[in-house]
Image (cartoon, rainbow, N blue to C red; front, side):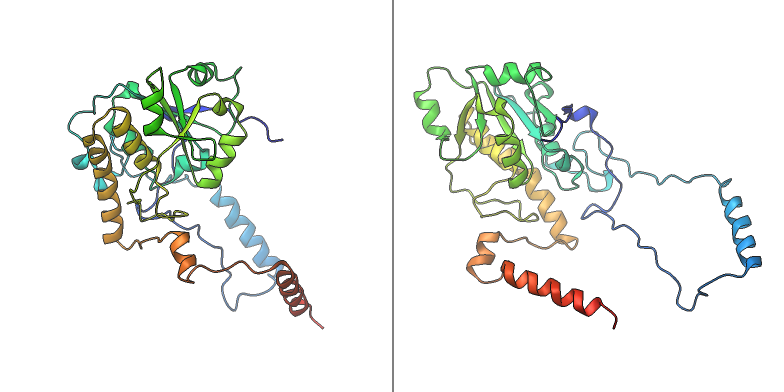
Length: 298
């Protein structure tokens, strides 16, 4: 079993590495010069050692991080605040976002845009993979509240619109899991806390507009899109969905204009024979043996 990860709030997140807005900067690879001598003479070795000792005294230059907008958490040059509502949306529902640690450093994550559209007291972000009742008292209290729902699809999930029609207690809080589908599945099934609230799902014809990241199907929505649809239903206000999707549309448009490509869903690629099929196990073993034999020098 993995040790429990300490849950962090969004304000305590680790700083993200600087890089281009479209994609992270690749690590530089060490390369040897062609024609370099295989071995140095003792004199050369002594000179290299002396030069190396001198390098330790040089000051370390820290890479300057690009200034970020305090509201949308985007670099100031590509700030999306013009697409955010002038004032935070007034809602009565409280959002709890459970964010996988790997998602915290993604350049194109949508949670900061969602939080920027809502009042500070209505959107709480918890970062972590494992949560316990003893360590996360606040989250435990939220999960045990009869007015709390968790948005996660599955056989046991009820359609959100149908649930609120029959529920004796109108929902006041909704929990969303932020991460890839495999990360969200891991968080949901390995934390017993998240099976305490009523499980609901969205049945909507809306297709994802988050086209710069691949989804399993066109009906799989990003965290921001799920929140937009759910809040529109719970607050009974369709304008909320339109307002929340505006910065996401601007983000995708900007990325596509600067070299990003539309990421079609895996479902579409499989149907059209464009997604690479996994190699059978026996063929993978043969391929490994071939590579091994080719690497052996006779």
